[in-house]
Length: 323
Image (cartoon, rainbow, N blue to C red):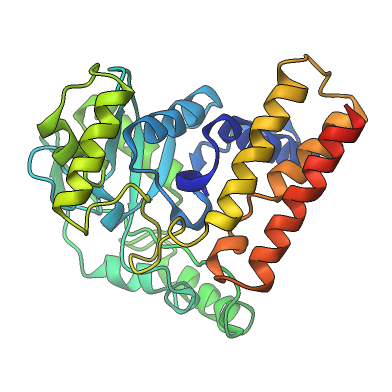
C-alpha cells in the first residue's frame, strides 16, 4: 500500500515481485512486463511520497502505471481527467523540486469484480467515439480491473463471458488488447509521451498554489497542515479504488510498528551491508514485506490488524536476535 508504506521499502517490494515473477516465468517474460498496477489501486498524493513512488517504477523499468480516475487531477484546474480513456502523463514533483513522470493509464468506474466478470469494459468501448490526440484520431481505451474473487463471479461467470466476448471481438472494430499493445499502436502513429496530457496526484494543485517546488520538506509540512485546518476534506492519505475508505486514518496501531521495523531493518541490515543472499537477510525481508500487506488495514480493527502487528513483532525479533 504505497500511501502508507515506508518509502524506503518501495523498491524492495517491486524488486521482490520482479524476482518472484522471473523465477516462475523467466527473465525474458519479465522484460515484457511494462505496466504496474498498484496494490489496491493506491496512489500516494503526498508530493514527496508520490515522487518516490514514480521514481521507483521508472528505475525498475516500468513504462506505465494504472491509476484510478478519482485519484488524479489536471494541473490546470484540479479536476479529474477530461478524457479518461486516453493515456496521460503522471507528473510528480517533490518538495525539493525533483520531478518524475510516467505514462498513466486511467482506470474508470469502481473496482467491481462483477464488471470484469461480465466484460463490461468491452461493451462500454463499443459506445465510445474516436478522440483527437496530438492532431491524430485515435481509439479510446477502456480499462478495468477486478479486485479479486468476490461472490464467485470470477470463477463462475468470467470464463464463459470472456470466451463469448473474445469471439465477438475477434476481427471486429473493438478489439481486446492490453495497455502496452495500445501504447505501441499510438507510438506507431507518431505520438510521443510528451504529447500526452498531464495529470498529477489529487490535491497537488492546492499545494503548489501555496508554495514552490524546491521550498523543501519543512515548508511542505507547514503547507499541508494549513490546508488541513482550512478544509477537513483535504488529506494526504492517498487515493485508491474506493474513495470512502482511508488506508491511513485509524491504523496507527499497525502503521507505527510497520515504520519502526522498517527503520530497524534499514539500520541493522541495509546500513551494515548484509548480503542479500544471506538466509538471515531473506528471512528478515520476507517478514518485513509481509507485514505491509494491505489486508491488515482494509478489514479494519480486529483480527487482521493483530496479524499485521504480529508480523512486525516477528520481524523485529529476527532483526534484534539474528543480526
